Image 1 (tube, rainbow, N blue to C red):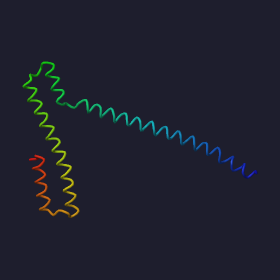
Image 2: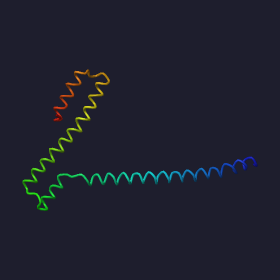
Image 3: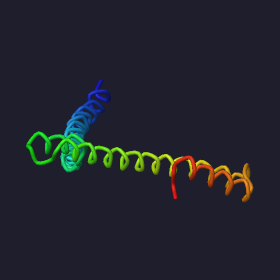
Image 4: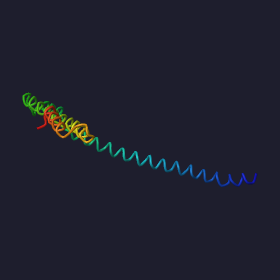
Length: 126
């Protein structure tokens, strides 16, 4: 019995200390992670607030600053800009796929150039 009591006298206090340290470290990591996430969320909210879109142009018309004709022209410009941006993102994405197909040997240089030019044409990239 004395051997068991001796082992328990060492194991139990160290086990409790380890358990307490575990919970302290867990709480510290959780607090640091939550702080980082709050900072990231704040930056993303600020970026979203800075984005100008067609709704802002409509508000200018509602304020009486833009006429209906100016609103229509501005909306067309925003729509065209949005389409260019979406086309550009699509081009970058699919150009990467073509590049990888070339790297693995599925496409040769001539096929790659033909398909890349076709993609540029499809995405209206000059």
